[in-house]
Structure formats: C-alpha cells, structure tokens
Image 1 (cartoon, helix red, strand yellow):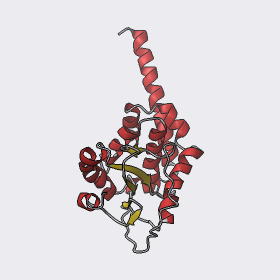
Image 2 (cartoon, rainbow, N blue to C red):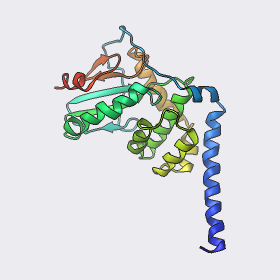
Image 3 (cartoon, rainbow, N blue to C red):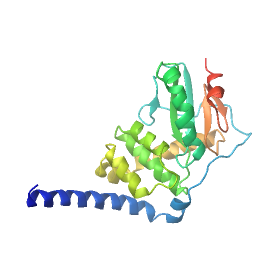
Image 4 (cartoon, rainbow, N blue to C red):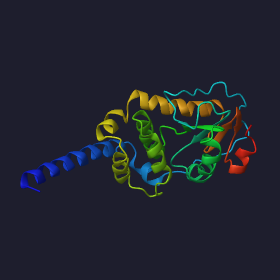
Length: 222
C-alpha cells in the first residue's frame, strides 16, 4: 500500500469514528446514568382490556415475521433492555420459526414498549427502528436480542454499521419525527390494552399479560 493510499484509508476511518461518536454522545448527553443501569421491564396486571381493535399494524410501520396470509397472528410487546423479552426471541420464537412461522401458520409483529424516560430502552428501540426503515431490521434485531447485558453503546453502533446501516442513516434518522412517532405508537398500543410491562402478547386477538412459553403459544394456535 502506498503512502497516499494509507492516508486515504486513515481519513475514511477517522470520518467513520467521528460520525459514530456524534450519534453516541447525542444519546449519552440525554441520560448517561440510565444507560449504564438498564432495567428489567416485567410487570403483570390483571386489568388488560380484551379488545384489540385499537392496535394498528401495517407494512409501512411494522416488521412482519412470517407470511401476511398466516391464519394465526401474534403481537409481541417487548423491550430490548428486558431480559425476558430477549429470552423469548432467542428461544421461544426460534423454536416457533421453522414449524410455524416459515410454513405460513403463524405471523408475528414485534412492538416496542418503551417510555421516553427509559433512555437505554429508547436507544435500542431507535436503532431497531432505523434498521427497519433502511431494510436491515432482521439482522439488527438478532444483534440486539443476542447482545451482552453490559454491551458498550459505541461498540453496538459499530456492529450495526457493519450489518449495513450506514453512519449517515443512523445520524439522519435516529431522532426524526418518523422514528419517534413509530416508537410512541407502539407504546400507545400497549397502554390502550393496559399493558405496562414486557413481554406481553396478543395472540389471535386475545391479550396475555406476562410471559408466554412455546407450549402456551402452540396450544392456542388455530
């Protein structure tokens, strides 16, 4: 490599690190203490509404796991900072995948249940939403589900970039009205059903507050 080529490479790397740092410090300046602490969102309530007519699901604002024509529909209200939620995606949903999701029996939509005051949860939700908008949701979702509890935010952003989400998209879309409104809409859907903890589920129109196992879900499929 020539001296000129080496200098160009260093310049590109420096620009990338600067963009990543801008995103990171914009978030960190909002609430650094909450980012470090995290939280486990697992609350049960007997007062959930049974009507799910207020829930809005569409291809523009939500990522669909499975085929749109599947007769069974599961909505997962979750938060990437919730250990139980990540366990569900890693184990239960993985078990459902080949037999029910890929075969067209079950479709799943994930909705973020996260308040703006939950800085860590919002950080992850924004990353997932930007990934969805740019066509990289599935890869980034897997990254967030399998991340270490003590993941460094800067390292996480670098991993997201490596999966195909560009630095420019992260910077330009991270705090846009569209990104924030889509997250708020998911949270509003949860509140309309009196869901205030994660994970919670709506399976074929019936609300289930709290965790659902593989057996719980399969036993209720049509």
